[in-house]
Length: 82
Image (cartoon, rainbow, N blue to C red; front, side):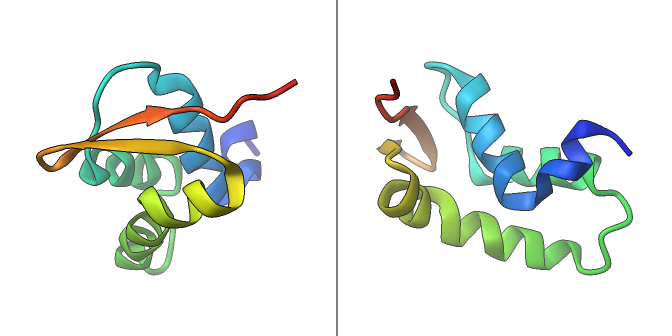
């Protein structure tokens, strides 16, 4: 099993946020990563619901990320760690 599959959906979203840097992104782009990472997921649309819940909501409240909206795109400001 690959490391990404062991991460799970929410941690894969967090990994995406950590790797995106200062580039803007859409929820659809995150969904695309999830579909590629979890091609056998029984309910792919449930993953989109998770993306909508996590971005910007829960990732802000529970994991310390900040988001700036640029139209339908987001720019992430990662939490301060360390």
